[in-house]
Image (cartoon, rainbow, N blue to C red; front, top):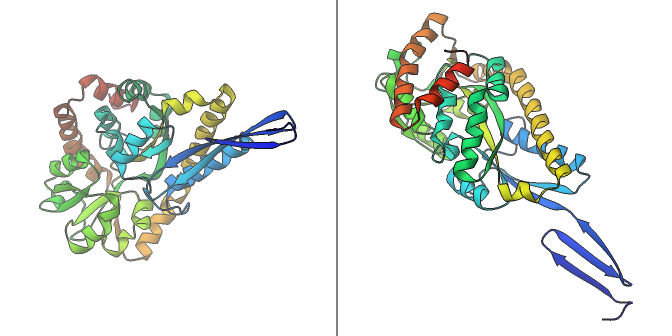
Length: 339
């Protein structure tokens, strides 16, 4: 090939152009980010986080880093996506259903009624010893990194289609959809039964009576149109609703120091945007559900105390049965100010 010829060689995300004996390198690294839920920032806070992360990273890196979004579990359900992020250079936003089979200690962060409000939840994850050690343990067990906590809709509320739930005994005999086995344990402590059902099947399970109820923050109730098949909503603030941004180690190792700083700073910025957006919209979402057929009940403090009195000891006992050591429980409760 002569000196006046042009040779274009395409490699993975890298274009090498040699022209007239002079070479230049133009590169853009593409990062896949997978998650569940619709690509609708108004209805899905996980997508809001993902789209803001993409925007911030691409702007700050001047296009050197590009993020491709895969919403709606396009790359697989929870376990498939976790396998992908552990084994391939990528990012994944996982729920408890994705993380807990690998690191059951994650369940200590969702002890019922442990976190009372957003300020307490933010402090727990931003500055707590439990969360610091959990991230280290996650890396030791999986080789991947827990990069961020994504606020996905506020605090969880109970819904059902049988009767208004004001106290634990109102659960007696009801069948609830569970996100994972921790929720099964919670329902059983109240005298109900719980069956794990994937998010994509929840609407039909509730419509056909496979389950009487479920629990999710108002945002997810709206996103899944669950108000169409659920009549009663109880604002019990059971658990803080969050998911977890997981990063592949090889991906992080492939980034320059500057690129890694851009990514980590963007995760914090996108997380802060999510917190503000979620918290500002909680009441309007509750109002929307009330206006669209749901009967909303706010438990009294005495009723919430009754829920906590039953749920927390039962849940802690279940954690121990799952092999979660007491030290994790103690750290979580201490960081939350419950010890």
